[in-house]
Amino acid sequence: MQKSQLPKPMSYNIGRTFNLLFNRISMYHLDHPATVQGIEEFLKALREGFRLLPSVSFIMLHDKFFLEEQPFDPRIKHLENAPTF
Image 1: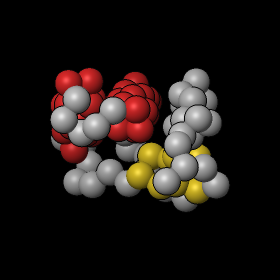
Image 2: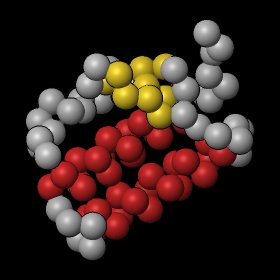
Image 3: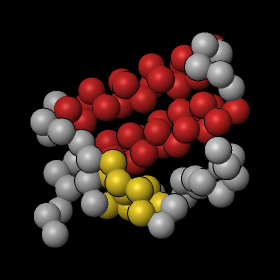
Image 4: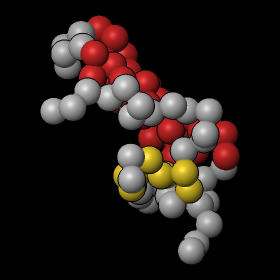
């Protein structure tokens, strides 16, 4: 397994903003100001990652998210209270 080339703070920030966006989309509609802000923050974090890598992989396996084959920071809680569609 190849180690991620993203620095840990950058990887953490991308994971954190993804989690915030995921939660906001689950709670609000896409046009809600909180969701729009979450989209902007996530895109900003992704752009920083794209400065180092040409692509960034998100993986979901057994209700856990991974970024570049590294699990999201365990302090980020996700999918515990996600709505069922």
